[in-house]
Image (cartoon, rainbow, N blue to C red; front, side, top):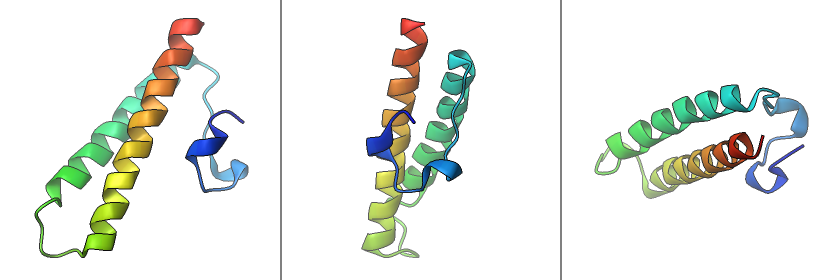
Length: 76
C-alpha cells in the first residue's frame, strides 16, 4: 500500500486508484472538502481547539495525499 505514513486507518479501509488521473481527481475533491471545512470553522466558537486541530490535520493529510497523487500521475 502506498503512502503508509499518511494514514491511521487499516489498509482495508483505504482507497487506492489504479488510474493515476482518477486518483488526482479524487484527492482534489477530498482536499477541497477538507480545506472548506477547516477554513469554515477556523474562527467558529461551536468547536473546541482539539476539534479545530483535527480539521487542520485532515486538511494537511489531504493536501499531502493530493501532492503524492499528482507526483505519481506525472511519473506514469
